Image (cartoon, rainbow, N blue to C red):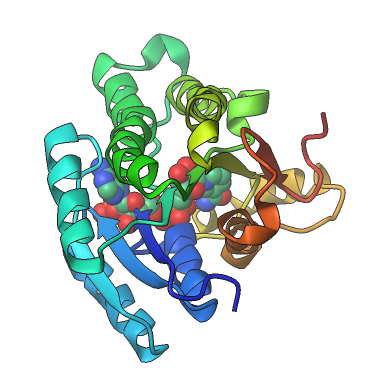
Length: 247
Ligand code: NAP
């Protein structure tokens, strides 16, 4: 077991990629807190984790509120006595072409994806600095590297996450805290299932491995970054995209 008795907080862990990360961590021996805006769905994942024999806690968490994040992270510390791993996974899209994009669409995406990552990192790193250990994993996207029409807000938020990852890694490295990002490509989730078949076929053609990724593909990279196997890696972005984007 690569994460035996570690305590992890996964934001947006009630469904999709976050849920898979939570279950993968539990299978590797971690106790997992699911922080999600949707408490009911988070509680279902809590049950799934407990069925694997690990401790779990579902909390209602809106990552956009720094006050709420600080309160909830302190409650986690009270209950579990430490926070070893933070996965900043909560993310939303509100797509529109630049000229049609409203202030509200821009602000909402930046608030959840980028400010949410900042809020949770700040609250958890206070604890990790005292522990002199920690792993922070930020879920970015290849859109933050390559851009995408209709996603000015999303691409800027994800590029911001990649830059924030580097700065945080530089600030926290001396305290034995690793900060890395995972940039998924086209991953099969409820969100991507809704795209037209024609578009999906076109996208598949642009992927050297010729297939879409699964939530488990992203979760596997996160397990590696949360484990001691990656202890000399920090400030990096691991791209999980079947080869769509190559540096
Ligand atoms: P998802 O299925 O929509 O799950 C995201 C979860 O975050 C949902 O449970 C959502 O709740 C929750 N959430 C939304 N706003 C929140 C907030 N303010 N505070 C806390 N939780 C909040 O998304 P996903 O497809 O699994 O994506 C997970 C991450 O991977 C995101 O950061 C996304 O940008 C990134 N990503 C995904 C793909 C892909 O192909 N799916 C590709 C690249 C990157 P509600 O459902 O109630 O809103």
